[in-house]
Length: 157
Ligand code: MN
Image 1: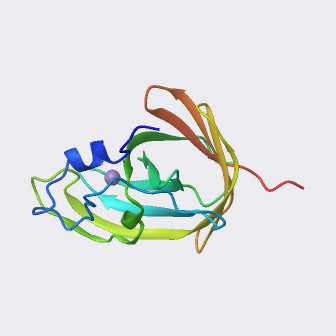
Image 2: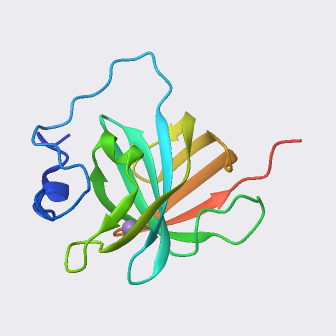
């Protein structure tokens, strides 16, 4: 783990210009036991997309999902492009990122909750989400560079 996982996040933002949280300090991992959190934010940037974020190692590991996080199982895989790690405080963020700033546009929380971790390695992340709208097992498969495929799995019979 790099000394400051939020370096890239901070480098892209000016705390005086954006209402987003920009913590000055490096993140510290929350001590177990606690259920890790997830959030999905609808982000009306140049194109509307979902940002899917999973708490891991003291940050929100993040993917942009152009077609949105599916609530139903069995659909086609959705592209999920990994973006910079975000601070845990970002899970509560909703608001307008001003024109001209990185990610300019409206951010609304679509869902949030906790998750169970089934697997997390460089090739595959598998979790069970417990949210208001999203419930069930999701898998992310790393296909190269920043690209992953997101899939909601069928409940086991
Ligand atoms: Mn976004």
